[in-house]
Image (cartoon, one colour):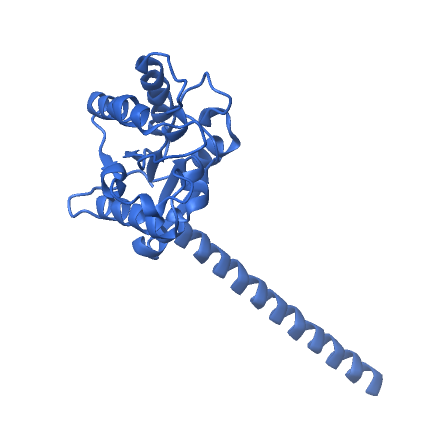
Length: 232
């Protein structure tokens, strides 16, 4: 009888352990499901760009400004261009696909700086055509994101073969032209930084002060009272 009693107690203890483990597993599953639901409810902002996006820190500043209802992803690629006939087109980079896989609600594109080279001689139509291809790749996503075009920061004296003349006379007008043709909103970071050469140590890459200013310009545009966000 005593042996049977011990066996019964052992089975009871095992049963309690099994129940506790099942309850724990269910709790963890529910917590995971809740976290996944929270993530899917966030407004996803894909920051597409070159080294100014990748390394300045502006996407991180933008995340802080936008708050907990947003998820800002940094998809910048150092040295990348809009044009497909260069050494590093953005559309051939892994980040291009990663930004699409992010299922963005909003896509913020700040490219064109590396297209403003001193030896750029081809027609602006090539830039515009490739820019439209890039935009179309995001507009046709199932998440149906809104797309914002950013006019890149000005270029100051530098040793990187980039010229502000080409940026101001070719690239930015081309961005405006594409925005007008596709009825897309623009954000003029260029104008906000025109008189701040002190924010660019090498004449091209913005420091943390400039990154804050860039993030603020984008934040103000995205959170304007009449902004409607779809497709997330």
